[in-house]
Amino acid sequence: MTDRAQEAAGREWARHWQYAELPGLDLLRAHYVRHTFPRHAHDGYVIAAVTGGVEEVGLPGGIVRAGPGSVVLINPEVAHTARAGVPEGWAYATLYPSRELIAEVAAEIGGLRGTPGFTTDHVTDPQTSYVITEVHRAAEEGNALAADTLLRGAVARMLTRHAGPLPARTVRGAGAVDAAAARAVLLERMARPPSLEQLAGELGTSPFALLRAFRERYGMPPHTWLTDARVRRARALLDEGTTPAEAAVAVGFTDQPHLNRHFTRIVGVPPGAYRRERSGGGSAAGP
Image (cartoon, rainbow, N blue to C red; front, top):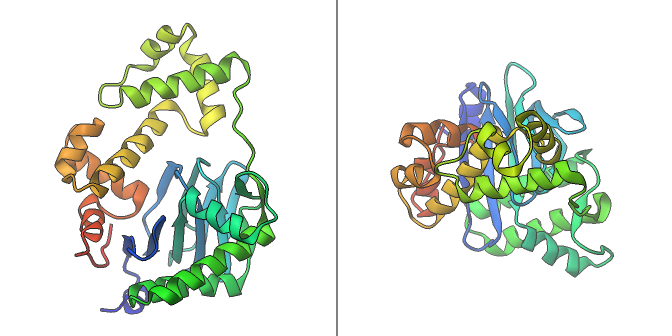
């Protein structure tokens, strides 16, 4: 069954992959109905073209409802959620460009100082939405020239129209310093993290004060952030060829099913399907 036929039938499907000729870019094309993305963040940027239904994106500034012809723009490390906004779900084609790729395009077009960041989270732009779907189509057909040309054109258009300097994340006050220190501890001891009380004690603060400071700085409580961080590290390990079972243990999940559950919720595809795409043998898969 083709992707469009699956979508028409109301089935969920997703493909999360990389095209070797487009370094610094992840691609996700999917139709979700029941799937919901918990609060999480990305190392790089999100440029998503909604092609059907309605996606509800939960961002720090509120809920965005994006329908066909819309482009959702999310900067690195911005915590957000996503779910269907209508019973039939939503379909979209998403680009996940790395910081390096965005910086490269920004340097080519000029006019942006410092690290670029999107100044809006949602625009109605059917032309760019269509171009994003064509990037996917060209990549899937193995047309590197078209895929690269369309990609740079879409990114340049969004940067020219909807970007400015990305605000620096400055640490101010004791709470922010404690939050940053807690993040460093959790990264270092990801497989065997301390409890909130132990973590607060090590940093010389109270659990409630640390929880509040961490949420204010990173957009989610420490345990939610840690799950997201574990999934990100698991992705990196899978990219290197590690098996899902080995990755689960390395990042601190109790077993592979535990990794499967959280990985699928946050990434949108199971770790096995994700790894197969990295090895060049994957196909569309449902969560």
